[in-house]
Image 1 (tube, rainbow, N blue to C red):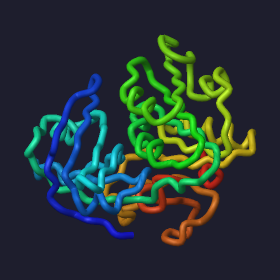
Image 2: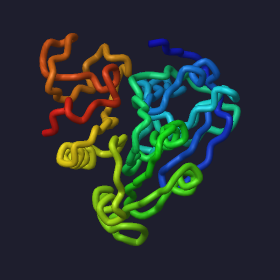
Image 3: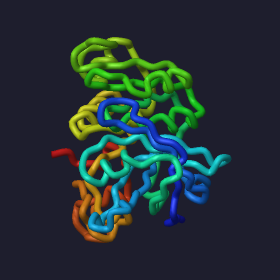
Image 4: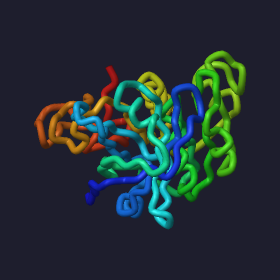
Length: 255
């Protein structure tokens, strides 16, 4: 798998919700290689922050040579990114990890919280009948962009929009059906979707969110339990950054 490390330039950035920022990066070589479900690692210009920050790819534009990331400020590194303006530069490595395997079968594309952005490019590229189900706390960032691509159902924790509760509540309320689930979001959501897929005889491809260090599988800092042994460690672990972040839900052991 080819990956690029080079200096990228910020094309634009805006805040789209509380603590959530939308950044477009000029990263021409990476943009020609990226696939839905992959991620990049972004390096801080403050060299006291040694480790890069992994951020999922939200948009891919190989013609313009740009990648789009939508991220939440969660610490000092992402705070630094959020203060960048058009024309600023930073080191970026990617694309990294294995993305979604797109199939020509009726699909349910599911995103929860900050797991919503990486599902947008998949929704655009997947050439199949599809419904998007998005789970929010309250504010529905990126919802309109998904609606430009396909039918969208939502769930909010307080029921202020769409179904009240979880993405599964929305699936059941609106009678959403499909053969394949593609999902990214918090682990409890993915665990519930894995069980739902098994119960309904569906395939489920899930993108796991995890803290990462190196981003290339060397440090073993982002492992999850798996049903098969990892050839690298010979134990029932798998490296999310290298072997994922997308996995067949049947292969993941949820605690």
